[in-house]
Amino acid sequence: MLLAGCIPAAPAPPARPVAPTTAPPSSQGSFDFDRRPVSNVVGGDARPTWTLKPVVSNAVRVTAEAYTVRPGDTLRAIGEMSGAGSEALALENDLTPPFTLHPGQQLRIPAGLYHRVGAGETGISIARAYGAEWGEIITINALADPYILRVGQRLRLPSDARAAPPGPVNVSARAAAFTLAIDDIVTGSQPALAESSRPTAGSAAPRQPVTTAIAAPAAFTGRFAWPLNGPILARFGPLAPGKISDGINIAAAAGTPIRATADGVVAYAGDQIGVYGGLVLINHGGGWVSAYGHAAKIDVQRGQAVRTGDVIGRAGATGQVQTSQLHFQLRKNRIPIDPMNQLPPR
Image (cartoon, rainbow, N blue to C red):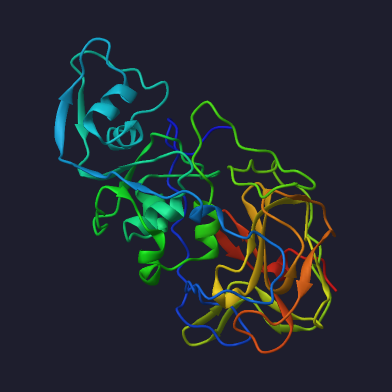
């Protein structure tokens, strides 16, 4: 499997969906990051992957200039020498595989602030370290699925990024000004890999928390099943002026089993987005991701392979809801999709 940061660079994905900043108690439109733990959620990951490896702040500012290719030059070598990286050079100069260069060829070096990715760093942790939006970093670097960074890769940072002092960055110090969304976890929680390494395949029952990058399943070609049965409390789409639900809310008695909607690998299990409480994300392959919020108990962990109907947790009233229920989302290529159009009629 190719790493997202390796040459060739892929076309930029769709712009990150814009979510409102507030949500009613029974629906989920807000993605505000809330560091308060959900005390009654059991299971899941004790510490999310994006907090495991401190970011070494090493960003350098590169000025725009022209470079004349010399005999023996490679795009990778020029990228390292300039500080912008080979990916940025390929984007700036509209280069395509196999990226053959010719002596005398003129290359444009794009100006900007560039961070060199270290082993185990994640997109979320890098964005936090520089006070930047991870979604914007995705766009300006044309990152694409599976969003796994390469050790040594140069990431161009947004123009408003704040270069931190050299050395390890205290992620917690910048958390207050940082927002976290489901899309950020899906695209920015994978630890960077060395170019010679490959992501870890999903395991039916990981004995230890998986802290490496996880391989996405093969392309999803199946069907989705209901995660549980119950009355629909809130539907997908606009709820009121300025309030949008990116999924549906299903009423469920506390402790009702929550089941995987399809085969996949758990991409996240925890409570780091306060509005959702206990939250599980499953990668189904082919760009499909399902989300399950407000769980009172989580029975799976990151990197665990699941099958349709497997119990992944228990319904509850965690997060910003007053009654026991499940918030359920389906996303295709990062864009929320109405689950009612994908689930079997009932």
